[in-house]
Image 1 (cartoon, rainbow, N blue to C red):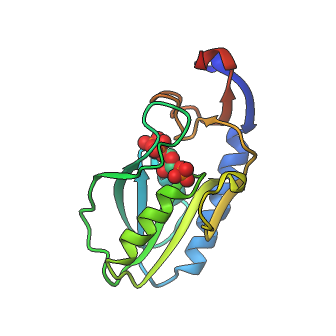
Image 2: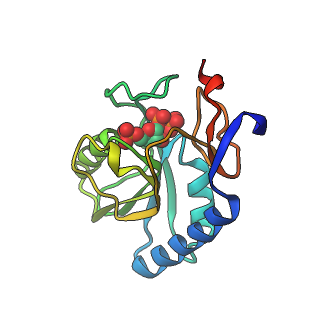
Length: 178
Ligand code: PRP
């Protein structure tokens, strides 16, 4: 699997250091609020697992599945919820946890949907933020790293379902897409 990586952008050490910082910051900002961490599957599962273990507080963990990329590297632009919420959002302090904010279409859709459920507050925490690709004016409240426009795999991010389990974030060799 690692033979297919062209370049490493964020090493395991860089990722773990930054996730710890974000967890500490969230613990301070949400002290006494018992937030609901809402991971957007599938990409967020590793980030959420690491982040939540750096939050020294009571919190609930929930998942929603939204997908717009299918098997390719370009978004279809059409966001679908394929696993609904099991938890009550009304009155909760909700933190949406994402692996990457790219065009912003997924999070714009989810933000509107979740806002309609009347949370006490709603914030976005994304590990990667790719502002150069944004199609809608959306900003995350917590960002791990800003990144340049490349197609990333690892730390939850996939290509055609693979590479999510890499502990670092990198790009694939061009012949892998061929
Ligand atoms: C990825 C990622 C975000 C979304 C970001 O999900 O996890 O949810 O794309 O892109 P956007 O800002 O352009 O909308 P994907 O649809 O690939 O599903 P996955 O999490 O199952 O890999």
